[in-house]
Image 1 (tube, rainbow, N blue to C red):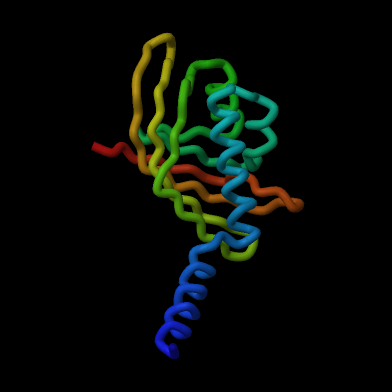
Image 2 (image 1 turned 180 degrees about the horizontal axis):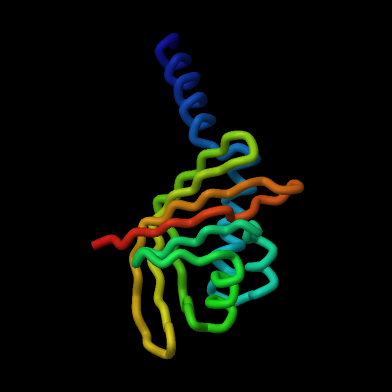
Length: 142
């Protein structure tokens, strides 16, 4: 009976350790909002979710500021048809959050269909109660 009790307690602590905190949930929601805005080419949402000092790094080495990032997505120059995220981890420390995930996407850049598979690092900062994308860096998966 004692063994069963101990196993129940250990299981409870294991489950609670994996559960998302309130802030991790808020960051996950911001990531989802960003994902959807990139697919929809939603300029207003992209402008609102990106920090003014955004540094957006592409897997090929190109780095964009906020204006360039928003314009390239909103104009369709960088066109995401679908974006699927997997293996996402979120770490929150104070007003900063680090998100890592694998991004699989179907693209249609310049009318040319393609696919990308990337490992992505996102850095978020909480400004006036809202999570804003401060930095992004991607690397290609082979």
